[in-house]
Image: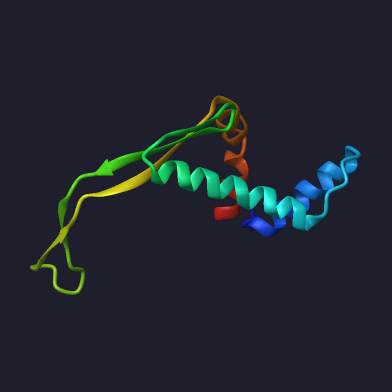
Amino acid sequence: MATVTKRELVIKITDRLGSKGVELTQQEVMEVVQSLLDEVTDTLSQGNNVIMRNFGSFEVREMKAKVGRNPKVPSKDVPIPARAVVRFKPGKEMKEKVATTLQLIRERDN
């Protein structure tokens, strides 16, 4: 299995729309995809959640401060400050589709 880049997603979306009779250039689709990503990022940076039905939800959570270890000097404690992190929870439809890929993952990892 391969990694799919944003550029490859844009090409796939452009092709899919083209097969449905919607003619958009790759540049136009790239602008829409980038606008979506920018809007999700802006919304999360304001502390709000983003919910996309059947895809999933993004929420900002607090990661509490903790003490870590320096791998080079294990006896030395390293303080890790509290921070905000994004948590993604997949939607029902995504969970169901991804659940069927177990065999592909096992084949890839062997």
